[in-house]
Figure: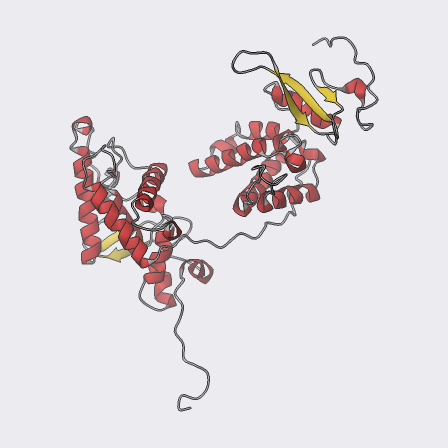
Length: 405
């Protein structure tokens, strides 16, 4: 594309910028420390607005990357470009749905994160091969620490996100490694970067909080569907089964009629844990029967009567959505968030007692009766290290010294 009239030399432009190679459409203004800006259309149809895109420390490559991004394209070799190529590869499409969503979340984070303390270009516009290990480490630590307000009352503080920082680092290692193998970049600057320390949170509820929420879910599930305050009827038995059987969410939504037998409930565990059978107890049997009744109630609705019922027991899922289709993990998460927020609003629990779905597995392992070996078998964990993450029981021991003193 032909350029317009040649730029006049501007002595106020930073000396490290070659003015003859500036991209079209970007302008310099010497105001304060100086800034680079562009004109963008007004969404309401008014005259074009001025938008600051970089500060005085921006490099020429950064300015070209910014203009490429504004044009709806990622410059070849940038993080955004490598990610776009990766998401079209078989390596990406063969990942599980949860992994793909996690990587897409990290890709969005690179587009939102602004370098140079929030004043520079977005992270996805940086060129991979121009990054170094110290730069990657600085980015990870900046995300983990957050950023204070630029001025008292400015309201632009960014909270620290250690977990997000570590997710992004793992994503970079995978992304740049793929880029090297497929010729999209020559280096992997994330290799050698150290993860930041995360706050230990297990989301485990207190026993009182758990029972209060389960009873609340039972009451709300008994209400007429689709009225204010109602909850899915399957939710309270799902919580009970999840807790009693020490299950992950993906495991509990995968339950079918084939998992139930006279001996108990077969738990097909994921993430390398060992399967086991949880023996029936009156409480587990009551939850299972309630889950079957909730499924029958949902499938009996006029809107779902046309749905075919699979003949094979392993295809008949226990937990189904309001539309009669198998409940997904994301669907469960949505129903759970609605319930826990409603429980707090109704003063069933206080905000500090809020817990997570996965916290029920922690609660279940901790409440399992027996020694550590028995807990390990019950939870399906193959290593003591994994058991230590879930078992929060504090052992009772005898004091030191002779027993007769």
